[in-house]
Image (cartoon, rainbow, N blue to C red; front, top):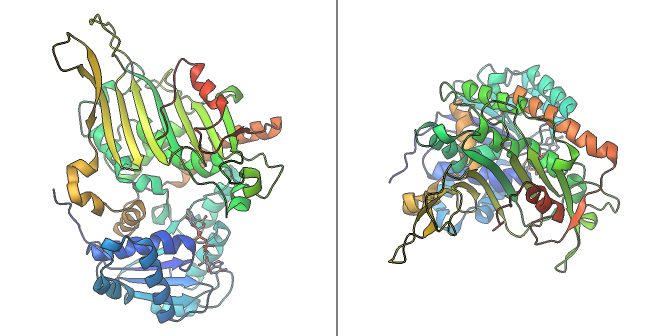
Length: 483
Ligand code: NAD
């Protein structure tokens, strides 16, 4: 199977924070890969904008080093790298001052797509938006891309939305959640809405429960002081896990159109019930395996911030009445694994005498590693031993279907940046969605802060705190293994 690459229009992309960690690790290597795949037209340009005083050549050298470090060796084509670097420019700019803006304006071309990637701290978004508009650099066709975190509560998210709205229409604002750029996440929509097979079963009558897991092996070392002000609820649940939940739970949109999809996601968020304290488990990794624990990494011996959270979430609508969505995410866990598992109910009546081999049908959507889907089904165990049942996976992983081409599936950032250039907002969060997500999140956080709850300590390399196991056992269910 050959994946099609459709070139996007010629563009000028300005990366504010073009020397930062995100630009070096994700944005620039991703753009190089799109250039290599001939999706980025050769006449396009990328303009790094940051505080350091650099020449174009010095910036290109930095980006060459970033490509060498972050692009797999088999994708490093010296001629393509030089061709890509030739498309790069640099402007030293002060987001909060007057330096550099006139040079940036002089560099921008007419009649090409203009995109501005705000890969800087959110406190600078307002300053940059203001200066882009004061200097007449952003026009009605320009797009701005903003990074997470989009606020730390409803009030700050509203303030950010208001500050962007002073200079840009909602159709020009692309709030990135890189989980939405993952191939499997989009495939989830294809599987649900392009097949007749699943949708009739996609409701409380046939689904027992849903598990969403985002497990990481890394801790917060190196950025603990920053993380400690946020925690797993703000850093992961309010955005990434919430978006995944929306894609599973939403009604079919009338069309695969940005606002139609986002309207349906918004309805899900608005239908989320408040979560009572007994349905929330927060954890903090302790020291172990020769490494310091969370408190040392956070440089805050009294920290009550969670590095792990598990929640039982209910959606108050017709389709999902009584179906729990169990969400969990944490650092320093047993394995790096992100997956969604949809567990179906048993058949209404068992006709086989030997039910010992029986298991529920589970649709597992794996986001990382090994993006793909598996449907666990029951079959007869082969052989002459009578009618015995066994569970087997129907494997729908990309590596199988695409073969060597699976390696060319664009990473989430690449895909999302190309969507920005195409002007397609389907995979970006709308302002009202983000605010609704915070409106659900805020009382949960305020609740544990008011109660003075302390997170439970868990062993590094484990699957999280004991109480999280109990959250499931209480309901007669079990978490899937993290592996
Ligand atoms: P960073 O600190 O590595 O880089 C910040 C960049 O902003 C640098 O290029 C710096 O020169 C520039 N900058 C800072 N102050 C400036 C000013 N006054 N004027 C002009 N430029 C200025 O940060 P980062 O890790 O690259 O993160 C950038 C944004 O992306 C942040 O909002 C962060 O939350 C978000 N983000 C980062 C990651 C990641 O993996 N690094 C992941 C998700 C989101």
